[in-house]
Length: 197
Image (cartoon, rainbow, N blue to C red; front, side, top):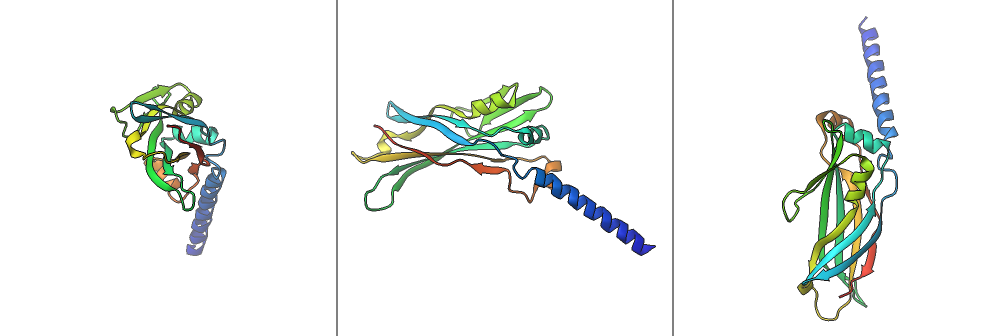
């Protein structure tokens, strides 16, 4: 009798493990799709360099379902300004990141974006579709990232830009299922250009 219960319990645990494994296997490519910096440039205005960029973020049914289940996605735009050297590695002058979040608001049935630590207070926007929200997240206009007095003389400088998306906050129900997975993190290739002054 006890061995039959133990066998039934073992079968149940195996079935549960298989279900969880197949659920995570189906999400192995949760962030599958295009992730790239399509274009970027910088202008200077009153001694401040401002970044303009267009990033394409992945969109698929796994992302849509996870957001509706309460997942928060974090979008990072990493900027590195380096001084070019001829006979040695480039010197990093400035590293800064623009951080944004995307959530789904079930009551209003809208996707909500917000800047994390914005310079002028909290900026939050909502969109009817995931595609509209990702388009807004991928558009950077006049973001100040460098002061001209941080650059010296006539040296050559390079700006490198990389976009990333990763899992942010999790509701308790998803935290149990996704605590061991790392498939909710991706980064683009670096996009670089010479800084014109």
